[in-house]
Image: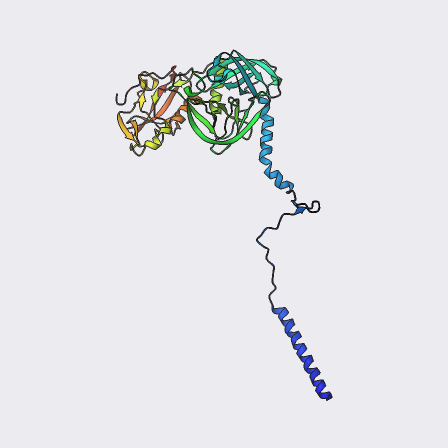
Length: 419
């Protein structure tokens, strides 16, 4: 009996030992399992509230908030630096303005320490009294120095000590690009500067000068290189500066007049390059004397550019200005430039084809008529002689043209196609 009990005890001990060895072996050989993080973001920490109240997310870290506010900090700094240069221009007319009425206001900016202020021509050209209100609320009477209806730019002057005037700086940066940030400052109410933002949505626009808010020009001439901004320009902002993110002047906002009234869905601005050319001449002489070439070319927006016509007309180049007609007696006519000689129908438009193609002016290549006009406005004056690179019947050569003053309006007796 004792032997049986002892045998059973030994068997139990052996079985338990075997199980223990198996368990230890299993622990040594089984792969260690690692928990993988869940793809679902953990809920944001919450701040405890009163019993029964809904828990609120914890405030984001300061670094996240500062990064999100960086752009607004930039605009705040820009406005603080540029605002003292921006003014409100308020005028009274002896005879009511056809669009603005008996009184009107717009914006402007301080150009130099001599008290010259830039604003819109349509606002001040016929004004009998001009008052300037500065950003800090000071007011001063102003006198008209000169205006240019073609660009809608004017200069008025106040008599104040230099220390109270802070001129706006011009851009020295690279050329503007579509998509670039645009900042519009104005002082429409005389209550201090206001700020609008947008992006540059178009470059190289042409504005017919007679469609601006003036009745003093006959149709025919264009304001070139105009900047388009995707920001609505309310009344009172015209004449104010268009700035880049450095706070530098890149253009001057202009107002347009259409058959239905004011065009305020977009902001258009005369570029800083043109302002550099126009304003000093207005200060010196009270007017602007533009150089005149005397050619006619179909606008780009109606498919008249060389790029659009190169294939259907089998042109030898894809960039430049196709000359359709030459004004008799003009500098272009005297230099021997040739207009078109045959009528061609291209995409439903009647084109005078076969004329000279201008591809460069003073060794600067141009892509279209806007670039040619912009170059002439910014870089030439009446009496200057320019060199045009011409392509005629597949051959290229240079022609010298001596420019003259732009006439009051384009002569009606332009040469017909082929004559």
